[in-house]
Image 1 (cartoon, rainbow, N blue to C red):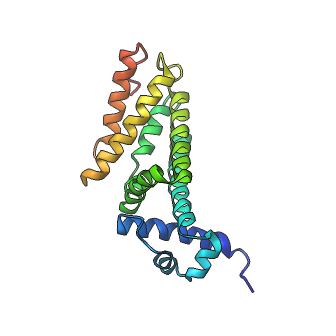
Image 2 (cartoon, rainbow, N blue to C red):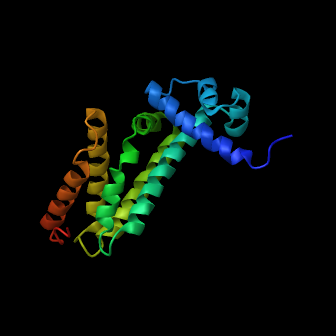
Length: 195
């Protein structure tokens, strides 16, 4: 007889385990058995919940995106009036985004999105949400919020990748992006620095 209420806990454990295994391997070349063992369950149960390896990887990607979304929402809730841009950038470079397993998962998922339709869709969802949040944050602060949001989204992703791959960690990554944002707003005729 199944234990009532265990499914959400087991699914969450599988996602944490998948991210950890992908992070440790640095590739998607991990087995359902490895993930299931790390989660403390059988491969059969992992297959029962997700159907197969591809679905587990997509679930892990959703898990990483959900964690990032929660980081952004927490930052926006704490943000002072008119400081949404700063909150989004800070959340994009939070310590939680730079855990080794999370970094490996992000890098692996970028690659997976090139060949997997569903992974590509999830990456586009992330990009659209980031752009939407940035556009909202830039309204009233920049002359062309849509165009600037596109550039800032690319800058956030690029600086994240560079910081993650350098092995030096985040350092001043958020400040670097914020300084660039202020410079772009100034050159476009928007407000400069709200620090």
